[in-house]
Image 1: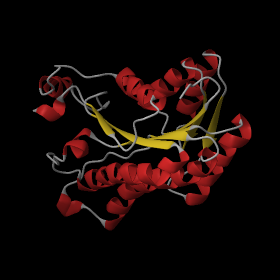
Image 2: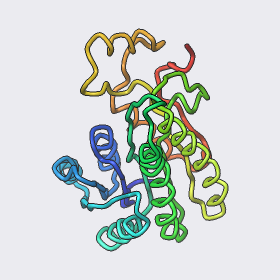
Image 3: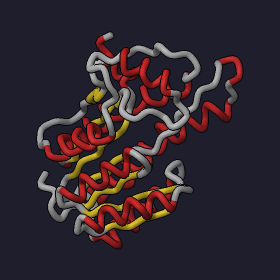
Length: 245
């Protein structure tokens, strides 16, 4: 897909999403950014898109709501004229021991990490059928490797495993409309703000390439998947070889 003049909708535009948005803008795409509560970050990202000479809008919404997902897609098409790319980045990543998990914890993770990707994709596909499109979901390197090695993340792991399955099934469902669906499974890309220097170094040492990847590596993967016209149903690990150890 040639990106000049195309329109991308990104859910979860903070941190890594901001870098992805800027990369798409530099490649020629206009960008719609969805935020729930982080309006300041979304506005900052929109400013970087406009600085690259492209149009940008920010839209507030709850991506676990079917009505909101339809509204977000409609706002994108209404203001930017079309929708070619959907990037489902909204995610919840919380740790809690199994014995302390509640039904609410389970439902919250499944809603944000899995349901939202389905709802946004369902709404977006109706518009993409006119001229084809790209949907990129976000899984996790552990899920892509079939290795639930860390305790305390049961709902997250199950939800992200669902994202991988959703990606494969959607790719089959939408292939006839030339809508390509893939997923990115990040590994050690960006250390969480609360992580200590010692923990960060430990992660780096456990990664074959010996370092954290940085947000730009996710942007490169997005550009590859958007640009390809013959890759669909794939989940690509961007993890510095972490899955090999």
